[in-house]
Image (tube, rainbow, N blue to C red; front, side):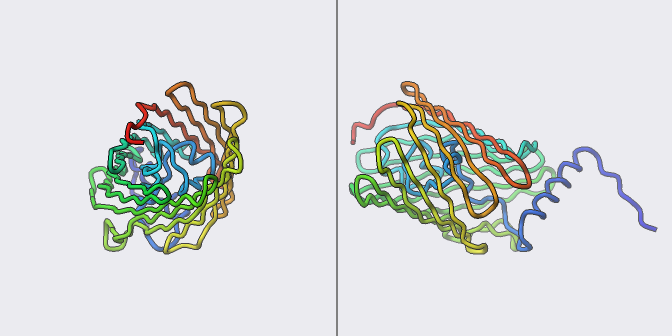
Length: 284
């Protein structure tokens, strides 16, 4: 006779989490430490961020740090699908040095039951037309009262300014093939895209992303400056039937960005970023 084992309320949360992961992931098991995009601006334009430079470049493509003219600190909060335990909180900053630019970021995903933490340091150097960037991150994943694993992740990026209106960017995530468990890999992800500004008010971005174990998918985004210091954004992707929307507001040295994305099965996710411009670089 089959005997049912009782599950308390805290264990149910873990069961639901594992059930969700198994439904929306393929048979091959991966760690969830994918290159999760940071910043509401990025989410507003469908995360086609590989060729743009902004206050969250240290999190999205270290090479873009090379073209930043200002120093920022930034914090972001991401609430995915309104499901408790699937939130991401991040903090980052950058500094423009005399010979190269530096950046750092920290991220925390999850709750006490399951969480991932990441801290990274990036370095970028530009030669007026081309910027190269590298980043090394410490990554840890832990399940409460069960196991905790840690590893190092590496990233590399290139951004090239073809002219005053067109940038091309490339980013490679987890080049060394780091993994947490023998059967649980952290994915290697390659991205290539462009950012085109036909006018001062319009930004058009597009990007192709290839996880080495999944099909290629495309991201396209648009940012439009309606009035001075106020931006509206939208974007779509081919990976999942979803859409992205957002807006940004700049008030003196503060930047406020908000975005929402829709998933055909799981619902809506919300993203908020607050950034502060510390000072302009004397080296520029």
